[in-house]
View 1 (spheres, rainbow, N blue to C red):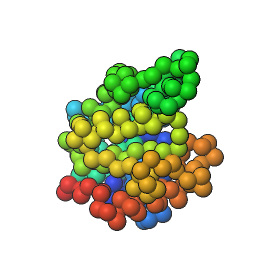
View 2 (view 1 turned 30 degrees about the horizontal axis):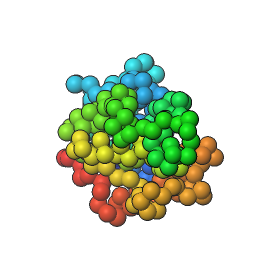
View 3 (view 1 turned 90 degrees about the horizontal axis):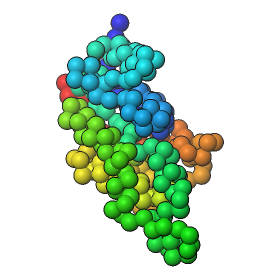
Length: 229
């Protein structure tokens, strides 16, 4: 039997867990579909014409179908429930390889290190498109199907290349017409990193307190899209 329809669906990578924790703390009924960034990076998750969302591999697909069963629908994108997303960045999969031969998007680092190679905005965008354009096109299609808000991962890396790719990804998502919210910018100021006391032990993710602050801000500022009944 289907459970009461949730207030929202959270779809993304491991960063979506903090958003779910925040919903739980605030009493929001949220369904969570979280897949490793590796699966997103490798193109294992995609939109499906009749089923809404599809994943390569039985185990991943079972997770989608389990959520659909709880919501009482075969197509989780036809429930009218708004979707918060945390996919499309996955910077840990593309930034380290980009800098392997000492390419840097920071002019100051380039000037100080004669062995480095300067990476222009155009080069960063071209490299980004090779790996992430497909995800942004998926986000744009998703936003056309269901009320959608893209939420950036918390900014935890101060490195020049991480910042460059983070900002390019934000720009590309917005240019695709998808509403996007950057929690660290809104809560801690432009360019600010996530405070240490809100970072999990792995030094990559925001904790439940961070998730609560993010969701409270989304609610207080009416960023959460309205459901379609």
